[in-house]
Image (tube, rainbow, N blue to C red; front, side):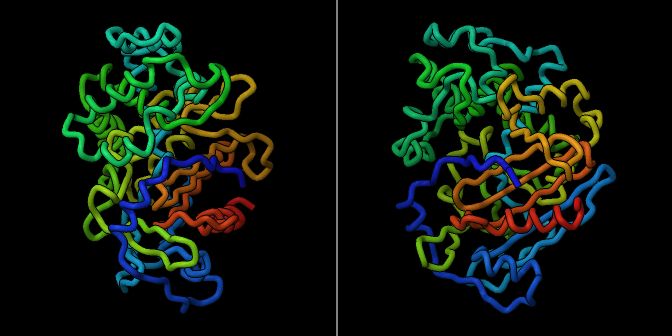
Length: 369
């Protein structure tokens, strides 16, 4: 088991505490059941899906939408995917390349010609950004002050993202170009580049490029609202507590290209299946190969960590893990085996082996022994 363990920045703790209400998880499920696994892992709800080239093979959810409430989660409920959104943003860029609107090696100077960036960035290719190898950092842009104030920003989301990009590129790289350093700013920048290329907000780009053609009716942005699971926080030994809805239920919306999509497991399975079917016509096999091939000496491609040498997979394994600190999503894709797995929970556990990881291992033993 080797999914990518990198996550979005924590939400400000003071805001979470203000939004919490008491609750807990019951311990009444039969031994070996999915509900028992959720209860033993201390998460209010847990879900998993297995998908093959022909569609969903297995889908199961268990637990409650809100800790302290009797309302069970439903198989059609939506889950926050966190940084697993990055693979979607990268695919949108691949679509732009196929349409002749951009290149994989388009430089930041070409993509943002009027930005007035530091000269050190002008020849940096966008693919290095999406591989987290451009030297870009969250430091100085996504900090505590920004996390507290960004939700009150009344500018459009494209304007907010461009302001973040301008700030990040106004000084030389904080990291070392060519050396892997994971940062959410890489995909916020990629989202801003897509907004300039397409002339519309990233939310519209992904809606038209992925959600609509794949029929992802449950897909949306930020935390799910209404009759859906809610994210939770657990402080030390205290029970899990739901954070409710509203602006503190997710990171600021400007971060969405790096980790702000939610959807039901069956819909996420449709996206994952693209990597089992050579793009399935949504992108070409060549584009899919570019999205899943790391640079020489690296293991992070474009939105995926790529692991070799797993016999069960009969080839490379694509993996990623995401969280906004209130949810947890894990995905593994084995194109050679024709199988993909995704597991989710509505709480990010700090346990060494959290429930979604345990569930993914269980499903893999069952379907890919």
